[in-house]
Image (tube, rainbow, N blue to C red; front, top):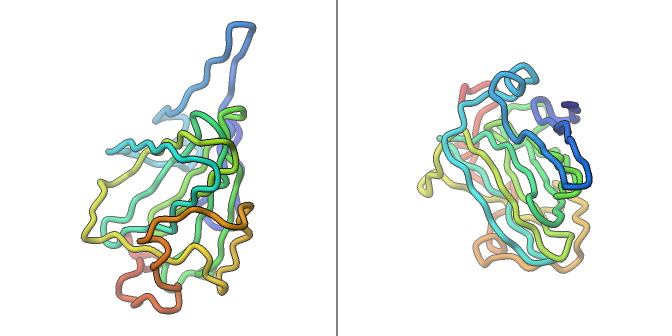
Length: 187
């Protein structure tokens, strides 16, 4: 397993070992010991999956309190996955990083608690899966507009399909700081 650090502290790209032959391949998705040693702590308490068509963009979502760490990957198709640091007081507040995830590579992305997350489908479709360190809590869910110019995400889709909720999400500058996680806040 290869782990690649990104410019956002704690956000990691994981390239699991894949063993293939004429029959197909085998890949480990999660191993508590190996991933823990690589800086990806558990426990994970909820697994989620979504299927989206080409051009669908979901995000940017976060929870506070009950921030979720996420280990995300694509089981079928391809997506561009994005993380934004929304932790008040963080030296990288408002910065983003992204990675292409696909079933072909098996690459994973680890997003620590306190970051907003979103993705857009760049393949024909994407079966997107993720493990979460806390349960979904609609009362503490927040969103930031996917096309916030102050963040400046370089999405690879020019006219994405977004939900009404995501289209109406506020800009990061307009979010009440009390609704955002705090850097070093233990969440």
